[in-house]
Image (cartoon, rainbow, N blue to C red; front, top):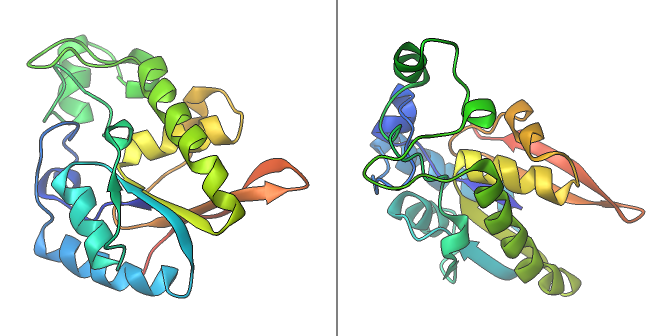
Length: 191
């Protein structure tokens, strides 16, 4: 199960929020608390969360108080594009920009390639797989990282993640049908 953190000021305004550690907005707190209804009754054998406060707080609000920190669930390091909107970046580069196709540039942090993020996601999946024998696994994190994680799990090209929308405060479920990885439900929220 993938849980994207609730709304922050930057997610609401469309600013790329990678490693900047922002709190949830009051609406993000409310969404987080309501999202707990979507996972009630599930038994989790492993709960992992990004170390960033917006993900940790979302885990708490939905009732996943025993979440373990996993740095591999951190959001994509946007490097020089941290805090900018897609329109601002497109204006700077002189063409319509997308992170999945064009990547990032170094800034206050070095930034990451899409392949770097996919490698981290593969590590999370490998860590989680043994725990699925005894229950569900919950992964609490961020939009771009979780979209890439889904693409890796589904054995798709990593850029497939650009085609699956993931809203703040949403729950998605990945699973199997006859040993084929599938999306059981995607981008569910209480809105």
